[in-house]
Image (cartoon, rainbow, N blue to C red; front, side):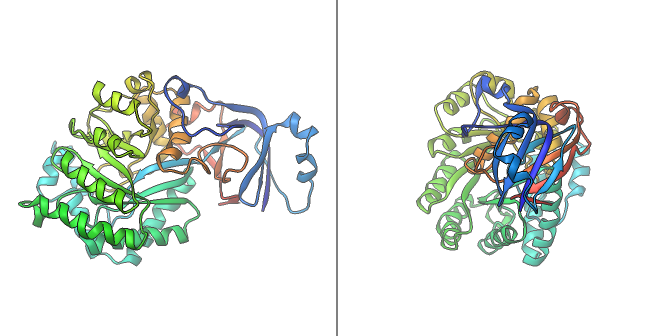
Length: 419
């Protein structure tokens, strides 16, 4: 299939020489082309530029070939699809009952101690069939796709038994077959401590290391390994052991860190070359220094802190120190029940005080880096996958984070196909 998009009001996040990430002051820079065209062939971006260049170049002849699908984007913009690098969208049912507890003032930790939270989702998931989980997850994937997401990372972690963790990851593998969205899988067996191990947390850590990780690696079910290193969950030492075992089995580390306290999780993640460390509500000078000396992407999840009523991470301080930032949805039933990356962009600007250019970089090129797909996604570049969307008529690209609550996406293209 060949698609020719013409008269684009502004083509966003263009690259002649692809970058891996954007950091520090450069996050406020956003390369665009006004009055542009874009050519897509066989699922890839093959050319772009100004309409004046189109009128004089090789693509003028190509556009007249039979079978070319032509789209007039007058007054509209074209963006690379969002890359959502942190989600938990394979789950069984919602948890709005806990929502009422939150409204009454119970904290995340208090709900977890009462058997709610992750343990509640684990019980439901253990009882659900793979088919039920696939059907529910496909609805969520379709929803986020039409809101502009073209790549998503999906974690396990609601199984908490070897059998159920494998079930979750097998579901993710099936989702890769059914959905056109690019999907990465993460093993998160160390998401919480099952009730039966509350008096012997070390035994559960041993189970993750000695049984779960070899089984996951043996079936090649995951790209990454993750640990919830935080107050009330897994310690620095336990995280160190789990990541070491994961690395030995070929799983690249990612980390849930510093959501609830200064946990040391950021430093452990950096030690093991984590692709990303995520949440980061508690981030100080020591953590920033560790990240500055690394290739780890700090990933903020403003939807979770918003939903839980927690203090947001110090995004401005981190950018001003020279760090890159990615933003992700943390789509899950307990602390962030939305995968709307347009809303996450708005939260990035409203709550984290990030400029529109910064949030766009955070949900595209930096999000792609945080899930290891920066070579093929995250920007408009020749040779990259044609995962992109065309907006409705909008005045400027700043309108996307500004107009929170409405869907600004009109047309979605994934791997060169109109959805």
